Structures are given as C-alpha cells and as structure tokens.
Length: 145
Image 1 (cartoon, helix red, strand yellow):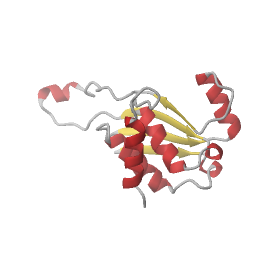
Image 2 (image 1 turned 90 degrees about the vertical axis):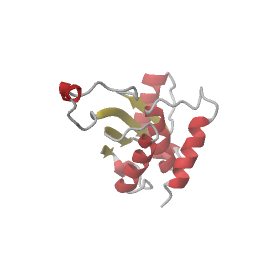
Image 3 (image 1 turned 120 degrees about the horizontal axis):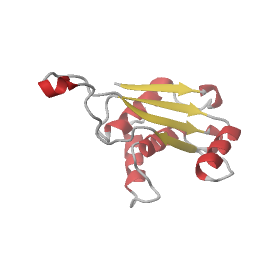
Image 4 (image 1 turned 45 degrees about the vertical axis):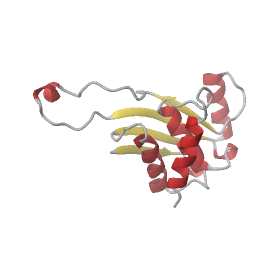
C-alpha cells in the first residue's frame, strides 16, 4: 500500500482531491515496481519554495516543484530473517521522500505531483533522453478522471 500524506492543501485551491493525489502517486510508484511506500506531498507558498530552492539548488527564485528522495528505488534488505526461512512477508515499507509544490508557480498541480514523484523514483529529465517527460505524459493521460 502506498501511504500518501498531503500537507498544506489550503495553499493549493486548485489541487485535486486527496484520493486523486494518491492515485497519481500510486501510478508513478508502480512504474518503478513500488507498492509499499510512504510519500509526503506538501503544498508550499512562494517564500518557502524559494527558500528550499536556494538551500538545495543554489537558486534564489521560486520554482514549481522540488523532490527530496530518502530511500531511493534500490532493493531493500528483507525486514527480518523470516524470508530466509521461506516465510512469506510483506515487502518492507519504503520512505520515498517529499514532494514540495508551489501551486502559484505551476499551471497544472496534477502534473507537478507526477513530476515530483518521478524525481523521487530516480528519474531526471535534465539527463535522460526525454523518457521521464514522456512517462509523465502517459501517466497523466491514463489518470485523467
């Protein structure tokens, strides 16, 4: 199960309902084969996103979305030795990280959610050959209500 916390929703009046935010996160995580994880989607004001952008990227300007990965997508070790004895157990819960979105600086909050999630999963549109943005568009088309 993907556990999704939504913080600061009042700062994004155009944000989709929490159930849709979760569906978008689940769709992105499933592309990396991740089913058991936790992620936080935080909506921030322009001042907070500017501070985070300066602190983490050296850019003193607001941006639309920032991602802060924690566990990444590498395989995790089993939670216990039970798996070594052939006992079935749930996959370990992964802490994907946080996606911070400034609704004032994005034209599509849904796109920012998926974009941030794909970054948490290790994708980078600045270094790939367009794969991340193509996947983002496929996910958004598939998840349109």
